[in-house]
Image 1: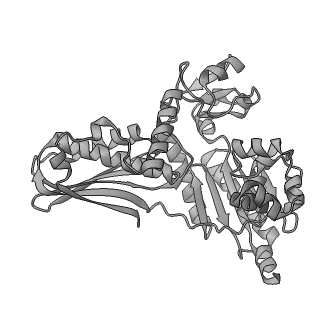
Image 2: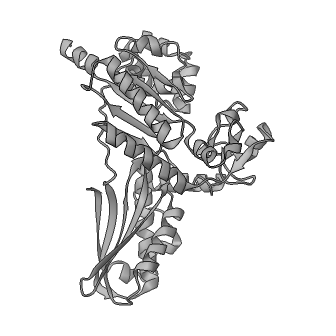
Image 3: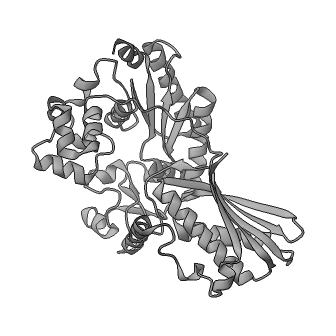
Length: 406
């Protein structure tokens, strides 16, 4: 036990989060948006708010809210469609700055990072280093960013959220529980609305109530996840900062037993592979920023084309890019032996359809499709366009999947 306490005391984890990232990028492009209630998302009554400024939040507007309701809450609301490519561009700049200055970091989304600073210096020195890193990011990008510094990922993340906007916060070793105690329970990371509502029904509104309960009793109330939640509420989190690498990828390749030049069938197969990979992304809560298409001709000559996109995981965006790549790549009109699709530059990210072409109907459709595939197996439901009418040709190729290949 003494050894564990010693390890925890020596551990230092920073959490960085770009404040209202998408809106902040838009303000960089157009300073007239500064200090205004701004939302990002598709326009129209059926659109959904994908991001909003702090000024918009004062009206009660939140991400995921129907655009119709947001406009009712704030008629002066400024609506912006958004730009995936710009957000990816600035995210990559911040990633480069972090990677050049720290020994170990984990990029958990397009705008969020954990950094393991253990052993770099004494605690005050590490705090000074973290402040300097934040200043560098602000100077290089012009974007506001907040950070929290503590002994583990959970407390560091909460510290960041409490320091927002554009702030910094430090929770020293031994002060984790007192820091968390007065907060409402949904301030603990990964507590969703369902769990939060259940806790409130049980009369548990603040974190200190969880801290006062025996861990076994909390486990009996909420099952195995109850013990994890109890630990987080008590400032206990031994999860490591996982080394980040944009080189990881997922891919599908299909080799034909009989070489083909049937473009319609090839497009159908590419669509099906893209759809399967997109479902896998969403199930693993990941987004891709790079798409590749590969062709191997009958003479074994192999060609690949790729394109960078804004971080995404929705079928209709990825399918469009794959089709575009195939059209550019397949220009020799030779028999094809193999085709493949690969998604790389993966980052963790929450369920996300196209942020700026979404609608309530589209969100519900994706959720329904993902639920069916999760319950009955990958490929249980798919687009009609991805189903080849010639069943014999569907059985005439061998497929393989390469997951998390470096």
